[in-house]
Length: 220
Image (cartoon, rainbow, N blue to C red; front, side):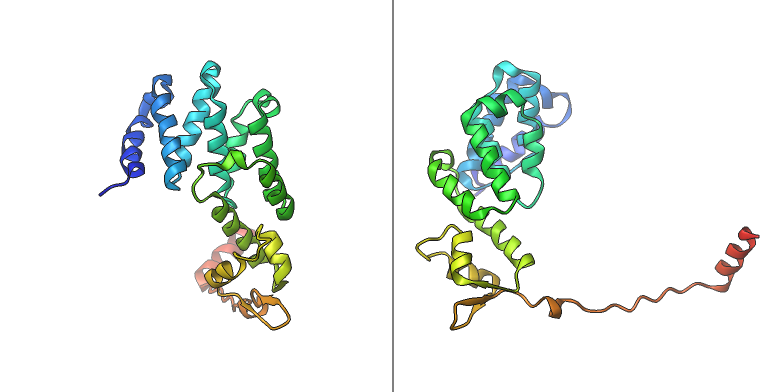
């Protein structure tokens, strides 16, 4: 049986084709679609960008809550550039004057600049923003693990716990297991051996005689 998201995705896909894409009468359907994404831990960037474009064309229809949800969903898709795309489509006035949007942009900046401990501290002070956003924190932790995986060879258990927003040390082993990371007796977590991933490649270029002849002929 298809989920609510899958059913709505098919209907929204039809709305986004052709000139109806920018019909403000479709906003209520698209906004309900965002609610479905939030509840079912699903995501549709194209539809969310269409909503933000409709808000640009029709400022009177602007909804702070929906825009906040769109930004938070975009954060769950880091390291892709969705968050930046969405941010660029929101009027500067809303970015500066609407507290939820301003705070979410700040949270996004902390994530994008890898200030993970500061992100969790700030999120703790603004948890009402992510109420009902299914899977938000796990999606953020997945992004953090991605950054750790391409940055570190070894990392202290304590530091990884802080980066994952895990003061009670309940998440580290879960994510270690997901990524196949191991820990020694000193509390050092082995992430990845960069040297093993660097494999020299022999590049062989084959140029036939006719090609050389034509190049020499044109250079004369």
